[in-house]
Image (cartoon, rainbow, N blue to C red):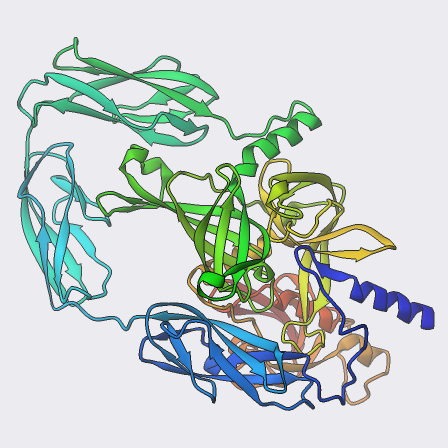
Length: 635
């Protein structure tokens, strides 16, 4: 028994994050009865992480071990965003994100924190006026705006065309003339509405010049819109579009180019009014599909086509001019959108005519929570330019080591596609890219295999030194080191299938790395992007394993003939998810979310990746009164 216990202790102590160092308390274990604080868990009233300016939110702190003194000192890392009283009452001051920290009074180095978002209280508009010309030409696009009272009113504008056969209008207020005629433009702003009559005029003047406007690069499988701009104003813009090589790219009658294969193609526009008026644009088609000619080419191609989307993430701590780099990790760009010079916001790259019209590029990056936790400032490192740009953490999950970071830049960075981790198999090749040991080694790539596609590791998520959660991981043998934390695990299609998070480190252990599966990540991202902390599913039931009853270990229950596995429901808490799904006392849960439930752990492992508000519908198969019934729980 002593040897087994020693082996387990080594494994537990060797369970370390890929980007962090852990130290024992001088090698001395702290007894349960000691009064030395070891951790603090901070919670908010109603588990809220958002409040408005002027609103208050009560926080509480539990000091572990609970035999330690429970007195804490509260502090805010930015009093201009939110303040906190001696009793943990937070008051929102202005829009922003802030960390509220609790420190043990008798050991101030032991702290716990919560990350909050403060928003301005929305002010409803009282009046609104549409600003824009009374006329536009067929095929002309003009951005309309508005003036609102009061100026700081908060609302989502809703633009409407009374007749889309005359003109269309998008969510940004951009009108496009379709055919000659007159129609009414409506703008709704909360409870107030503005209207404007717009005349669409026909084009009747012969063109004198013709110029193609558009981007000169496009990915295979994507498209770009080209514009044939003619002068003088109101000139007829009827053109014929042609491609020099339709195997590489085709162009439709509206000037949209569709990319099919890697190469260079010439797109030409010729006026149908004056055949001597032509213009051409050379377009390069880039193929991000991975070369599968041989394994080495495939690996080289994956690294070359993904590394510029895998960035560094720096955690700065301190105050004011004394900010210092505390730690760093890695992260993957997975989403991008564009703020245009006319104020429009475009979410689809295929709708960008030219990057010259872009004011700024907006990005979302995924990384580990432990990379950005407690940072006074977060910066993203772009190794191509060897610069850092300011960033902000939108939110961090409480259970999974995941965070979402937002940043802006002045050029386009291609988001990486996210793959399906459920398709991974043991032995499948995978690649890790990141910043091991710092930015001097940025874009370092390592290669290996999936050791096991689905491992569950117990973890402590509330600072009490007791494991209270099981997280799902991909086990692999790809070399990862401090600085790789938050970086991607890629398949040979160049897709993110995991996030490198931790490894077992010991003289007796080699190449045991663990990555959060992409299918776990994709469920959590929308909530974290919105600044919310995912609320985990709790069935609120008390149950007994059928197996233990059949083995005679529980004598007060009787299992129906033919039932040899499942969970026997002994109690259902009022208001819980179990009651909401329709579970009753004496039901036997046979399967949950399509997975047979033979022991309590089977159910727990299904619950860990289910999040309230995700819209997922979970089937629960039960045995009740001699019948097998399927219940449904909508999240």
